Image (tube, rainbow, N blue to C red; front, side, top):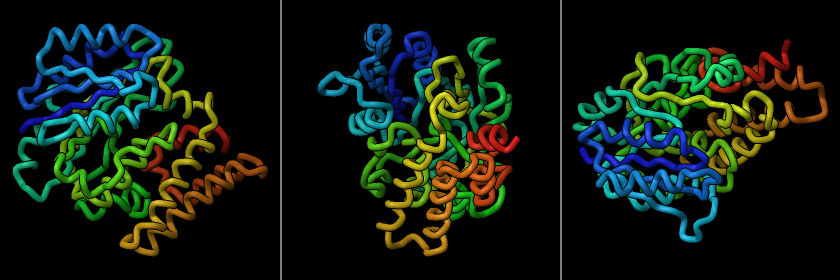
Length: 312
């Protein structure tokens, strides 16, 4: 296997060294692609040092050297990647020693186009744990049991009972299969580009379960995580998810092969978030949204904390 690991870097000078070293521990990792996104800290200097020190580390910036967001940075990394497989890692996260154990076996089957696994959580400070423990606790982000590839897309949409979810950090893709997607990450979304990307990926590609019961990577939680600030209410969560589900709904409408029942489910999900954002009391908006979702699946992700806050 020749794996290209893509790491978008923004405001991560304190974490990027650990992320890079966690990827370089694997002989299968052919290259680690850093895409520095005009960080306000000293991340660029750290990346430059890493690229000089390690032959497998390659550093890129956007052509205009400006900030374009994580989605655009991952897109640039995928365009530059020369490995046969692509894996993702956030700059403040890290891989564990079993990260590619399942992949080495599963990808021997040419029908396998992607493999996903579980990720754990690490709090970088006591303050971060106090702030965000209610969101992540100590649980795995994982899919609850093994599913056939055709069940992954409706499962992620919460159409098939308790399913769970997986993160980009636990995902590996056969590069040659990416042409099926058309567009990579949607840069029109400020947040949740990864969720939208995974939805489309699970529809077009045959994704197989890897290691689900143990973490293969770790989400690093600190005070400046963007996604945690969304989900504890520092940024209005319903607004960002309306944008996400509007994008998903527009894609589904234009994709003729998606079954009607799935399109209707996506429309209902979008509508439930719109109701939650409307002028009716938030309590009832969240209850309505909850009726269109699966509680157990949500509990492993990022919706549940908001439901509990507005319901109680």
